[in-house]
Length: 242
Image (cartoon, rainbow, N blue to C red; front, side, top):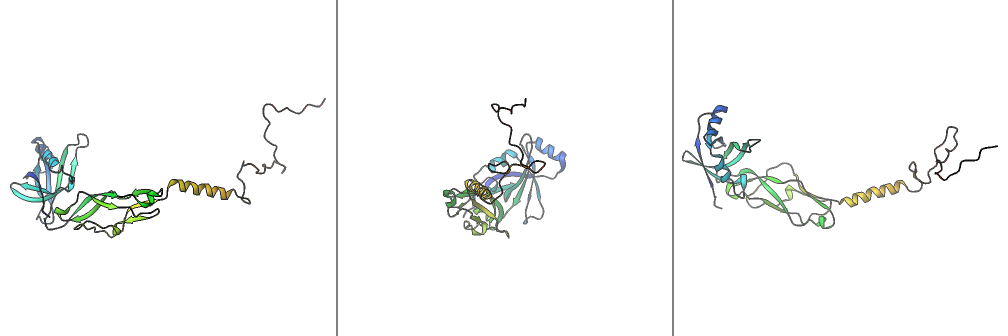
């Protein structure tokens, strides 16, 4: 698979600190840094923020492989982190990682569930537990997304990462067999369970709820049953003795 690079020009910088950053931004550039295991030390650079946005304006977004030219020297890089102004949303700083064409790099790829889960057809609810996967891939093999078919999932079944067949050249390095998706029982069944439990509680032999029809009246002070509730408006009071 051939590697297609999105071009980005940059220039090295020697200054640092807030004052230097302000002067750099006044020139229409932003401070940035390039780091990686193949570099002796991080490279401080300045880049045009609009050029950075344009370079990653591809279907792969942050996973776009960049041909980063620093003072004429070519690097293969990925945009790993950035800082935005909280009000204007302007790009303030960027971090790039230097990568090699023949070595895998760790990236986060969007996860897309496909198919109709069998449990959903039975009334269950499908929940996606992960929206992206952290995978290792060669720069040229980084996918736009990873699709996973959930059609076999039935109610009360879950799909875990160890059960997922990943595209060729893509690997996951995790010691945790985390959940990707799960199908749970529909809420109607849960309500039915609550109703059934309440019905069992009201079965013959079970204590009646207070105030329920047929429940014994509360006892008075002397142990006698308390008088019934007062009659309505049309009830007549007992006649007084003459």
